[in-house]
Amino acid sequence: MIERLRIIFWFVEDVLRGKTTLLGGKLRSSGWYQFRKEHIKKECESCGEKGKLLKPLQLHHIRSFATCPADELNPLNVITLCWDCHFRWAHFRNYKSLNENIRADAAILLAKINNSPTWNGKEWVYPNNRPTKKET
Image (cartoon, rainbow, N blue to C red; front, side, top):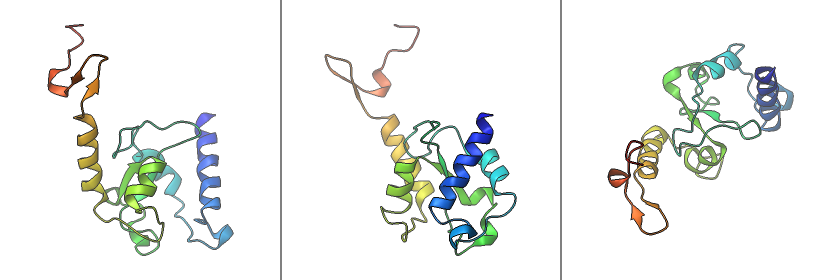
């Protein structure tokens, strides 16, 4: 049931963004929804955010589907991003723009996020000094 709702949500999202022929966009392959289901990851590859029902993760084409339709179902041409990272880092806040280095940029950003210090109420704790589960 949830999977059907997710597919309907993706379809509505595609219609609203003009990615279907209903609004004059390019027609997706008949295998697109299955491909997206198989290749989308559980976390954004740029910030680590998990997908939510009303804020699902997106599968971004590194080489644009509009210019390279043959790569639509190529697993090496997609990256999983949350909406914020998709808009900010993959399109530089303009859907007419495209970051072809998004995979490398996302890996750098995720490493910075994962290695950033956290505040424990008394001091900044860096990742290599954080207590393990056994120590707490």
